[in-house]
Image (cartoon, rainbow, N blue to C red; front, side, top):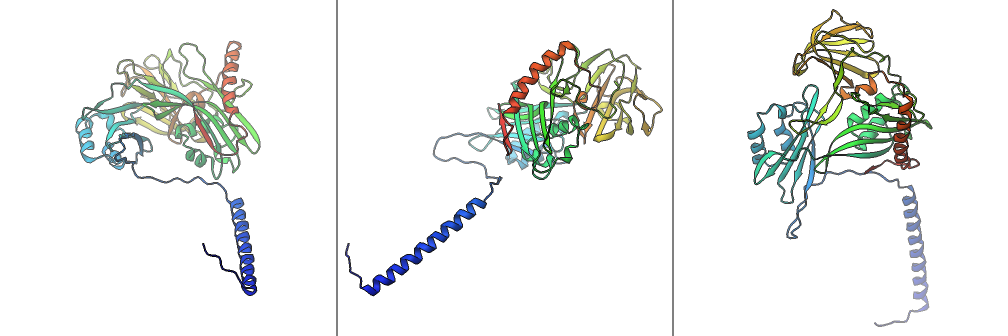
Length: 430
């Protein structure tokens, strides 16, 4: 490398240029540092094209989730998921005439497993029939679509969510992928203390709930096991407890001291005098078909003609024949709660406004029913929730139950404790 000496004049110009360069670099660094300090982390979501692999020999499968829109057929949803037309035709030709595949609920999800070759391997979704939702699982074996031979392989796993409210509680929960049924259940649990819609920026929600997985894909949510809401610096907690007593219809929610948590807006009346609870709310395995089903209410076995009463004050919004529900009555109550009474043999003269305890009909076996019973549902904003959590009286804990509740609460609270003090939205599935 050649070196040329500089004159005094040139050295002077070079030193000035160097000084200017140093000043510019320093200013740029300071500006960059200030911009870095002002940057706030943001969550960015972007839809990516399907993965493709070439020449590496790697076979990667992934799930595609597509929401059902009002009026959708299964073929419509599968087409939006990117499934090939010939595959859709094979499925609809074989199963399109089945009644259960025609009952799709708006806003639910259809899941499609796509293989490394870009072809669909599995399809999963729940149908929405009156009073029951059934898991439909299809798989492709040897080029032929068929019902999955392993529909019983459902796993129930606990899920933790910690959500910091930004604009609205429901919006923040939705962005954290908390299912709609969990959001509405949470609203009902604390309805006597505060409105979920009243949470403001900086408030927090911490949840522990059951999630149901089939073939590695989350397909549904179960009960909220514990919840903690921090509103304006005050913490509210709820813990789920279900007695092991035979014939129990489901659990109830209590505070950390085991006291009845909910003020259920006048729901202090059982809808009838019943013999037993023949089917509780929740997911269960069908004893004959060996498929998973969500029973969206509670079935009370009782003799034909047993009087059925409104479980709280409200307004009758429907009275008549309602598909598989048979003869049914629907009542709108406070706090967005709606109750449904199905399979009635006859109606009373009640119309319009009714009082809690007023007779609205009589037990029967109309609609899709195998014997006399009352199917009783509770809904919040149209979403079925466990009636015992929002629309049935909550029993006080007995002395025998208190020890079991304390043990359950301790385990749930230990899990929620992991989320306390975290100022951002996080999630963890165990």
